[in-house]
Length: 240
Image (tube, rainbow, N blue to C red):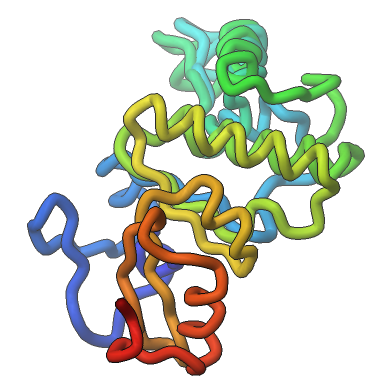
């Protein structure tokens, strides 16, 4: 998955996107293609608040001298962050002019945009100003997913998004996946939870010992068959 998101170079083979080979040399290439990733460890900056995480590296700079000095549109980022604030990580909204050049950001604009992004996904984040490291696992997960969805135009990778979450938090994450799908954004869910896979996926690819052993329509299989494919109890020849 890290190779597909530009974080690791591949040793051999090729990566195709829209049927065309691409060189995923760095995460910026993936972002330019509309691809975002939510890693199992979430990759959030724990000492930063949701809005700052969402716009990290993508800050909205203020115009003129303020922007040039580094002031940000914090309010705009907060609004956007409520809907997907962690998604602005590395893409903060900079202000135009000298202010933007110096680094001042439109914090109000970013806060507003973050809030809107979270609301769109139905994500519950109690505070836009508290460090994400002080938030619950469910809230951090919501922030990471919202950020990815906010910036993704085509595809989102989700690596074990329900790991270590409670029943209610897991339900919220699965519902978020459905909302993302309904927005027309493709979702690749990597999970060991067969019930969750069966619940939200359209097609299922099964890997065993690093090799794909099946590519199945989710409606044409069962959890028993999937487990069998994963463990080797069922082979391709055994599939109906």
